[in-house]
Length: 244
Image 1 (tube, rainbow, N blue to C red):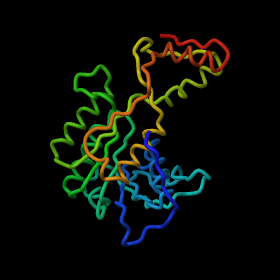
Image 2: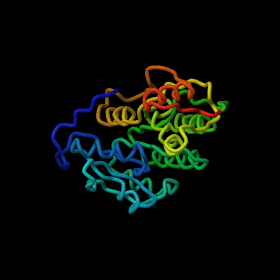
Image 3: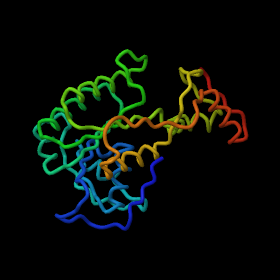
């Protein structure tokens, strides 16, 4: 885990030495926490969002106050709008949620960034993306990464394993029925904390020496969901079951 020491908050000035950052899809789960960390370091970014009002509503600090982020309303597939938003930007962070539209949306943003001459792009990817992966998410990221390589933008890939936070999606079922279900009982995953991913992204955005290549982020041990159920059983003090 990268340890971020933001120092005292300060407002930017025209002569500031840090890179000016744009966060694409600034309202995302990781992206909004990256924005908060940059603001805490006195380096408020620009955020690109299709729905600015919705994005501003989630760009909050730990006390619930609005972050001083410049939110630009634009669809990431609008090449001209993205080019305008990238004006004066030194480094961008691209972090979209997984969806069937992700590939086309991220490729469009990359095209706009290449046309705009973006100096560096940080992309939130996944560990071990391959074109022939069983998981569609891994295939999507592999396709986007391949396109990024062809466009020649200097870039850094942040590639975490599955977020441990995903277990919270099952929290209502676990709370009500002491069980949850899924399709991968025996596959192992070195679950990682999304806060560590946020720290890593912020470190790369702020420190040029950490840029380039791929940073694979994972937890310390591979666990099956059955083993996670055993850990929850011990932690909660009652039997928790994973149904395959």
